[in-house]
Length: 386
Ligand SMILES: [Zn+2]
Image (cartoon, rainbow, N blue to C red; front, side, top):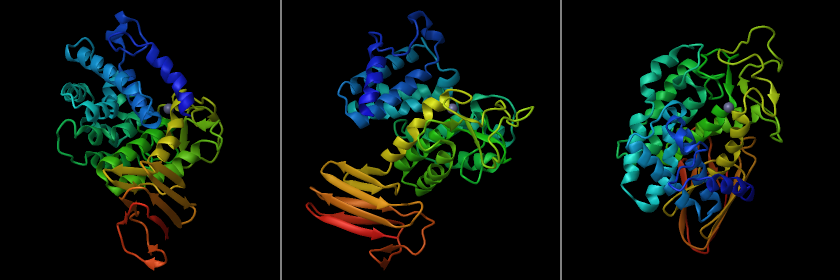
């Protein structure tokens, strides 16, 4: 997958302009170009680097962001449309670059993006009933994405973390929630009826937001919500081989046929829930493929010399002299076998979900929010958890 990605990454970065501009438009069109593309490609390059360690990438990201900053700072470009609605996506790359170089202009860039970007707190009254029209601030994919905005931005902006995502999540859930943890939005927020659909891109983006929220806060409710989506809504809407998917899924879908007459969806046509390679609109075909790999990348997370198993899926971690293997059929069974070997001492933690009952570790009853093991260098740990 890394080799395949490299082909496209190399092509994209080969078209950069000498000043760092990376968007596919003519120089004279920069002012009217929606720089959403900068935010997404810098994020993509960051995730690609974390997987590939391709040496050219950090410098490319640095130059792309620096050019973005210089043009925004003097008003040569401004945020509008998608770039305004998704300003926080750029913070994946800003945080990555700031952690490497610590240069102050990155904080300024962060500030400009937040100032020019949409403040979703000002739109919440629009979420209480379906509007039956298309808007950026009720768009379902934006809803999934924006939940992580405070988590990715508060650090570099030197702000206090307020768990704003919980407040926004609560309003979305109350007025547009479904039993599987999605919000309805066959394109924009659609209310509480179970025949309303949800666009697949929103599943992929909401999962990513929950991964980031858990990584940034350690608050386990986000990991539990991530599991809910990953084990219900994602597999429900794509085939096993991933060659066909639905644009819109519905909680209460009894047939997969074109609606006779007028579409039941509020902001989509009468075929938006049919399966196909590129059904309804191409965005989901391009976007849904990231959901499983990013979920797999989130199975283990680390902080200093602590490694935590955040999501209990069958997985292996080989990193920094550590080897961890998790054998499980979860969520179909509640049994977990961990094998851990290490060349240097570290703390290994396992997130225990709040809904777990009768927890046992190697057959002995345990009562814990989180399991923690101190593993010495050269030690091998085998543990069975139910
Ligand atoms: Zn889509």
